[in-house]
Length: 270
Image 1 (cartoon, rainbow, N blue to C red):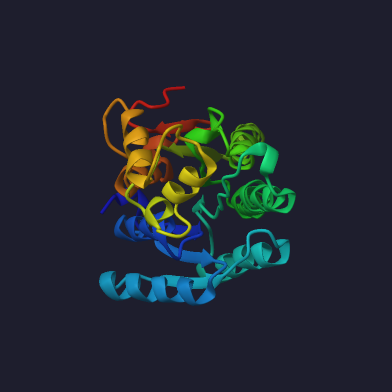
Image 2: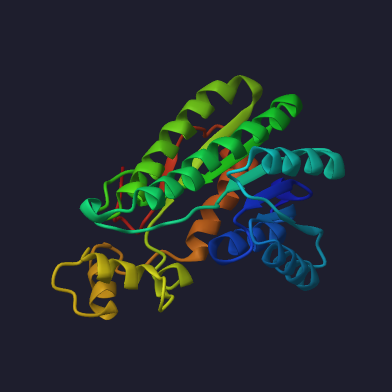
């Protein structure tokens, strides 16, 4: 257990499944009290109960739609009331809809921007209100390598992630005087996660349909193409991202703010 995270209070949005759940589990194992926040209320409560049972730690699951300010505000007011402070906030809630630009559905495009960018704004706004008062805190935005380099047939997602890096840097500048840090993590492709492998909605299927990999005949061709882009010849894992989260949440990174940390196996180095 990392001493600098012992008894810290952390909020993880989109924490009920996938990467968000892995981050919640890691922060618990590092010593944090964790609030698992997700639009899926049942999923959030089930994830929190399972993590608490496995670790005997204090974990709470709550319903939060990050696009609704009243719900986000309540999340922080309740956490401050119940735990006295909020030390770490991980903004992980996001959606991805891949479509060629000439065929993109305008409302789907808008939905990606609303969840991914407006949601980041609301979570950061209310995190900063709490953290400024306590003069301490670490905000970590889960971004993407698509926030540093455009992504064909994926303009909404890339635009939202580029926007998040600008948002992260701006908040870092504004909140430094309050001893509040704001950083982003830009993972590579989580090729073994359900985000990619789901047979109906996974990115392998989406990208095959969208023609993102010229000449690809099936999802195996798409996977091979993405692995070949990585100098270290493997996809990003949950552990790779969680290691970065634990570092940026800790006092070991107390002089780091405004960065967008690439965790990509060398695929993106900026």
